[in-house]
Each structure stands twice: as structure tokens, then as C-alpha cells.
Amino acid sequence: MTQQSRPVYLKLRDLVAAAIIEGRYREGEMLPSVRALAAEQGANPLTVAKAYQQFQADGLVEVQRGVGMYVATGAAEKLRRAERTRFLEEEWPELKARIRRLGLDPAELAAEA
Image (cartoon, rainbow, N blue to C red; front, side, top):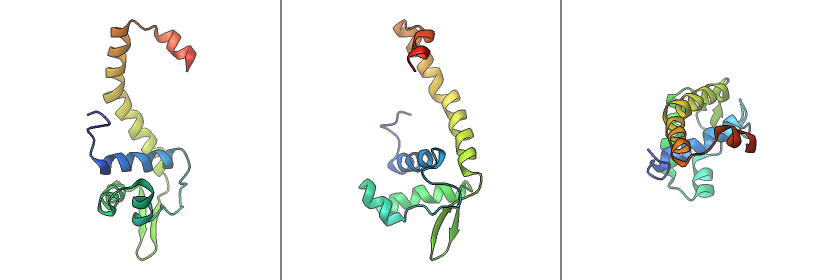
């Protein structure tokens, strides 16, 4: 599934997941409210709520009723492992095939990285 064909709530989930992995939202810190993130991203609040519900279902956030959602302990590492697995199983085979198709040298690509 290409990034363009992914549902909006998954794109929002990926955006927040990247922020957690990169440390912009640290363990124990409160995530932006549903309304704040919706306004920031130009998204429907229900769509943001769906993305946040996925984090809750995956045990990546802790909810304090009436206060907000906080990044759970270990969330960044759990997300990093899941993203790594997804990349290696779904994205890398396609990239590798494209590299071969285009006749690119992996060593040269690595040197440019």
C-alpha cells in the first residue's frame, strides 16, 4: 500500500509515531489534544481520535481521563521495532527491486547517504 493510498488516520498515526521515535514527544509527555492536532494538521477531529485510539489499543499511550494522553514508557522502542520490521518486510523488497531495475549500485547509494 503506497503512502498516498493509506487512510488519513494511518497517516496521522505515522506522523505521531515518527515524533515519538524521534523524541519530539518523550515518554511521559502529553500528546497534543485531539482538537489541537486536528487543527494543526487540517484534519477532522474524529480522524485524529481514531489514530489516537490505535495508539491506545497498541499500549503506546496512557490515558488520564479528563487530562489527556501520555506517551507510555517504552513506546519509542516498541514503535522503532515495529517500524523496522514493517520496513524490512514491506518497503525494502520493493526498494531493492527498484534499485536493481534502475541498475543502481547499492554501494554508491550507501556512500551518498
